[in-house]
Amino acid sequence: MNDDELITVLREQRGTITMDTPVEQIIGRGRAVRSRRRLPAAALATAVLATAVLTAAAVTAAVTALPASHPAGTHDAKLAAWTVVRQPGDGIVVTVSELRDPAGLQSTLRADGVPASVTFTGQGNPACQGYPGTGTQSQRRLLLGSVATVRQGSPNVMTIYPAALPSGAGLAIAAAMQNYSGPRDSIELTVSLVQASPRCTGS
Amino acid sequence: MGTQGLDFAEFYRKAKDECLLTVLVSVGDRDTAQDLVAEAFARAWASWRTVGRHPAPTAWVVRTALNLSISRWRRRRRELSVADPARIADQPAADPAAGGPVDPTVMTALLRLPERQRQVVALRLFLDLDTAGTAKVLGIAPGTVQAHLGRALAALRDDLVPIRKESRS
Image (cartoon, rainbow over all chains, first blue to last red):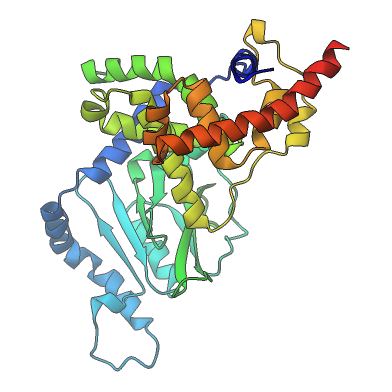
């Protein structure tokens, strides 16, 4: 069998495969991609300034969780354990820099309309139950991707789109230190959809 | 849905299965491939003014999906799971005339190839890109594409021809 015959056989026997994701779902995910891209730096700066007052409580909570070695009065925002910044539009950017005060992050997110269970142990809250989504595994991943995405290249930063949360759903957010072979360890966030409940995401 | 949406929807309808097959051959796992292709199409929609005028938008989607696959691999610092060839081989054979699923014999042979060779086979033979187009998508030299294709065909011939002889006897 020469190359041409083999290529013919491969093309004939490749069969067909159907992608069953509806175009509406693709477009919904595309809207989330576009909203992330179109955020101009100036708007981001304005947003950071405008939300500074709103996030002051969160920063304060984080600063109180600093290691004891930090002297009082050096309240540098860069040292915050985590920050929550609401973007213009729908997105909420969560950055976890230290694994401290998960309860504070959880209540801050709840105040922003996101029922969430936050753990910094690498393990999820055992009281949480997965959100009973419909469709294939890929469709469920698409749904999760439209609600929350971890930033590429920055595994400790995620964006949440509260408007995309299905009714009765919440987010389980787990952060843990990953031991890479690179120059330093890094915090990695994982997120999944759960059923919102008092025991899981709080009241 | 505006004009942009209509154009994109038509493109999606025509290209989605072809893209899925190409990416599936590259990554070896149906769910992973479908997720990568969905994300790539979502990015195509988000940049449709540019992608819609691209000379080969299907190749753009496939390249984006493959780049995403690499990014995820780097992020997770572990190998992408590839379907077990033995498990695929146990599935009932497809009927090409009926437009059935991917032939398990062919898929098993493809999954035995190194990843780059699988990508070249998928782009050259299944997506019908020429050597230059395949080289551009993968970011390698045209000569490297031909070398990978030559090695892949040699390996596939060794894998597939004995099976075809057995099935005839």
